[in-house]
Image (tube, rainbow, N blue to C red; front, top):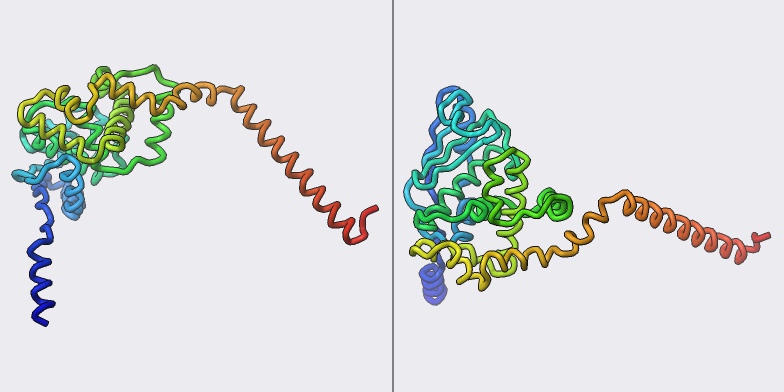
Length: 288
């Protein structure tokens, strides 16, 4: 019994305690009380995954979450399609519940998670600037898994859209809704590629270097071992099949080739079944 107790105490002493999570203070006018109640049930422990990904141990001070009405000054500051935004330096997140979230978010909770991630990324970078494509792509990676919709959007981007380099992606965020979707698609795909090929610690290591005053470009090169231009080329090389063959696969010629192959397969299968049936008849003495 004493040995068991000793082992239990020792194990408890060495087992790491869970990291603290950010504290959210949600504010809302009376007419948005229902949305406030809904968000107060948000599982804030989900934010631990954000902190792990960006290498942040201390969540920092309380994050203020303001729910704004459509007629508010906050709502007038951003395009009508924007359902939320963050001001990292002010530890502020503003959500507009009356607006429908657009890609990459599906719900108001998703928007909250995404925008809080931006505040935490700002803290991990020590308040120093990082490119918006990295900020948005990292928030996407921390918020959601890469699904079929993401893959389909990336396929379209690599096959049908004109090539857009990383230094152009940031400007897409300030244009039309369709341009912003393209920017999210490319940002999310590139950051996930970094994580897949350079490890889950890579984003946090980059931010830690930025926090010490190192420029983002140098911090990225130190961690990844490639400058941004070469890293982007490596990313596109890994998707070279789709960029080369994708345009052809979407043509009417390719479609008819697929239809023809399906028809040929159906003919071959039918002949095989007929041959099998005739053989069975022959064995049963029913063949003429």
